[in-house]
Amino acid sequence: MAVTKLIAVGNKKGGIGKTLDYICNPDKTAGGEFVSGFNCSPETAANEFDITKIKFDKVVGRQGYHLIQSFAPEDNVTLEQANQIGRSLAKELLNGEFEFVVSTHCDKLHKHNHIVFNSVSFIDGKKFHGGADIFHRIQRISDKLCRENGLSIIAKKKERGKSYAEYRADKQGKSWKTKLRETIDHCILKSRDWEEFLVLMKKENYEVKRGKYISFRANEQSRFTRAKTLGERYTEEIIKRRIFARESKENKYNTPLIIDIDNNVKIQQSAGYKHWAEMRNLKIAAAAINYLVDNNLMNYEALSEKCGELETKRDSTLSRIKEVESRIKFLKPQIKDIDTFRKNKPVVEKINSVVFKEKYRREHEREFILFEAAKKSLKSHFPDGKYPLIKTLRAELNLLYSEKEKLYSEYNFAKEEYKNILANKSVVDFILNNPHEKEPHSRGRNGYELE
Image (cartoon, rainbow, N blue to C red; front, side):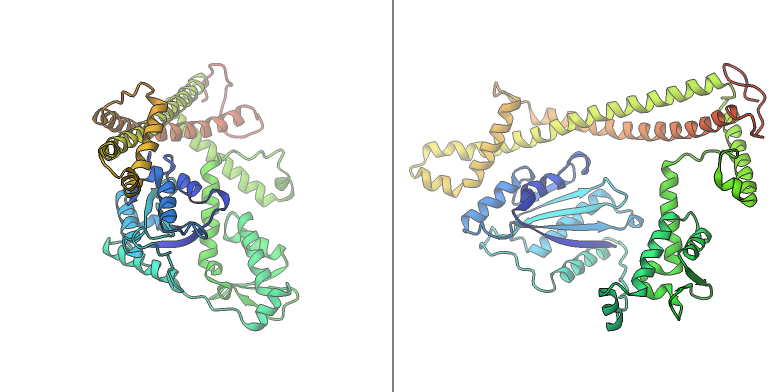
């Protein structure tokens, strides 16, 4: 499924220009490959929007709109497919009467489109008025396109509204449900699993009742409140998912270290926790030894050397990726500028042969603006006026994209390998520096064997 959102853009905070700069960011759009315009060029769209407004004397008020269309990660929509759906959405919504730029971002787990369109029609100068049901209309068009492309459509369940009594209590800061929601959110952020979540809720002075539906009651309440009545995000199943998702995200970036039995305050207070920590340490140590044996790294110097090699490989690959992306970032606008310059040059030069020059310039104002903008940009890079062939630049660009794809694959592999070996090395370092630990080892560092 795809979720949509519409934002009006005014003159504040950079207006249309800043919004277009954001959505056309090469780092978010695979080097700008999935950015395109309708009746305008993405590089000069802000100026072209202004030209339309000036032409129809409608420069005041809203300057444009920013439409966001986000796809569900589980749909596995491709960048090409997402971009095409975005263009189809914009064309159907705007009836081909407004200039727009579509950009597909792939910098997050879920792919999403950004569509920025002019507030004034280039056909008749009328302003965009979506009507009271504009948000529903956008979502309906998006859902239709998703169905046509085999993507999922999930109808949102309507949550029960607040009663008047709950509304008044909420306004006065006395709503039990509002306080319960805040407490649940707080405990989720501190919990590693469902059982710990329930313990934390009890510490927040909530009585917990298990059954078909999980329920909570504050000390001052007379009745239990079922969590499911708080909204979709507070059912038992969703709370468990939220805890799991948060814990998984944290574990992604944290190396599981052995717990320091001697210096952990919680261990001193709980014999049960101490036993659990000892078992956990044994499992982590055993897994680390297995890793070292499988990779023939039982010598500490070899382990350290391998860490260094992988770190160097990761960093050098990342450095090359940045060089390639920098070159791509340079070539993309050059290709578009040269193309724009050459396409509009005949129109601009024709002014020398016409009689009514001012009339001709007004009729071809768009071509003149695009030509001058491209010429100015190219002059800063090619002061001698000799521009390379677009064919040559595109060939180089294709090679760079291929190299970039290969480099990212190598980088991700080296990064994961480095992260893995570093985690196991940290376990070895802890064991070697803590003689009280019971994990098996008989010798120290400096070339000694680890078994």
